[in-house]
Amino acid sequence: MEQYTDDERVEDLKKWWSENGLSLMVGIVLGIAAIFGWRYWNSYRDNQAEQASLTYDAFVKAVEKPDAEQARQRGQGLLAEFPNSAYAALTTLRLAKLAVDDGDNATAIQRLQWVIDHAKLAELQDIARFRLARVLFAVGQLKDAEKQLDNITTSSLTAELEELRGDLYLAGKDVEKARTAYATALAAGGTNRILQIKLNNLTAPTAETVIAAPKPPPPVTEAPPAPAPETVPVGESAPEEPAVTKEQAPVEPTPEPVATEPTSVEATPEPVATEPTSVEAAPEPVATESTPIEPIPEPVPVEATLEPAVTEPASIEPAPIESTPEPAPVEATPEPAPPASPTSPSGPSS
Image (tube, rainbow, N blue to C red):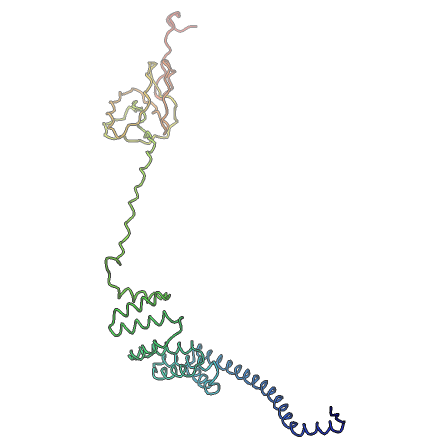
């Protein structure tokens, strides 16, 4: 085996370095440059994204103020400075809306077409196609609008897409296709009440679709009121003769009972009798239902004026009167003399 001396090894190393040293140095420099360049690029991209975000935020505030002129200036400045950012497509969509609000449909069509051509997200492209189809429908370009709808693939736009497709068919006098499109929009989850009204206007009523009106509820019959307790009117509790005065005229018979208000006199619990004659107990008052009252008999004139008896407002069961009650003192009526004793002689006793 050949042995290398130290000098030979040094010579071999010099030879290798002379052949590969330059390439190695270039590789190291390029590696270091690539590392620093990548870091710089990331920093630059982050700064650009931050600046684009701030510019877009100012643009949105101008739109919501609303300040249309300032919004246009900020939006166009963002497109000129950051045309490749994600905010460029969003800004263009809002600029297209401002153009539609101003009635400039041509500018709106150009803006939306720019989003379709330059947006990086497929969802943004489909949103731009849908809005472009609405603008084309507004200007009467029905065929072009339908073509834009055919290119939409985002499933979340199915309900809105089919509703707009139904509007296009209805504008083209194709009622059957319009009805089918509206039904598809409802089946896809459309909750717009106007969509339901559109479908109802196109649906002809048939025997299957007509919904019978609900039957009216049975009439509620009120329970009969409970019978009120029968009360005896004041003044017709007993058929006894009222106390009258000497000057009182006979009472004419009346078809209905008349309750007279008692005068303010001292009430006596028992009727007053002038003679110690036996008086039959008055019958218990009975309440009758709307029956005519028999005529009250003509009162018998009394020589002396008797104090009228007053009964309580409520019906009181009359108590039987003793056969020989003590006569009550009455004005202008002399007290009757006591009967003579059978054992005493005529004349006053000493």
